[in-house]
Length: 227
Image: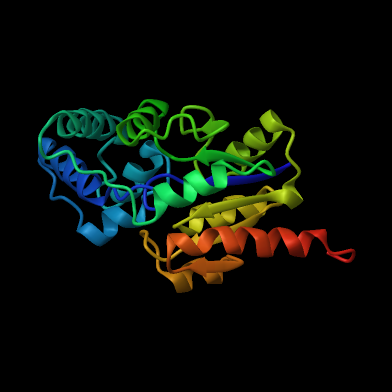
């Protein structure tokens, strides 16, 4: 059985407004100047403690744990407010529905979000039943460590040669390669296409609707006798 594993933020869902707003609130709550937007988005995909530790690199006297808690609180408050805005990227629903209806494919999520965060996103968009396996920051070390992907494959009995990881950051692609899989980059997320290609993305998509054909092409390569 073939397996396609998706990242969440920056790949399926555009969470940048919420992420930047929550991180800004967390830093201000501790009397720190918030990092620039691009710097905040550069750490999307990492587990929260590691991401905040990187953003605090210029403040060695500050412990990340307090800001982690402040970020979680801010994100929860934003999610309950009328400003809550985490839309699907164009084409995401249609493609996930199309791939999920196939008999030869299984779908999963591998993300640096918490399980609570992923569950909230999937419930918001009515996608909870589309994915057969979900691995989060609660289950494994931060990307690019391959444990999330390895665990997801083990849970479904999937072969690395028939597993693709779809993501918008270099952490996703590096994780895929470390797990023995192939990485598919997307250009609409938080790392630049050139960065994704540089770390080994097989292809970088410019439209979500190009994914089904890409999936078929890459799996067809694996089916060749000398692949």
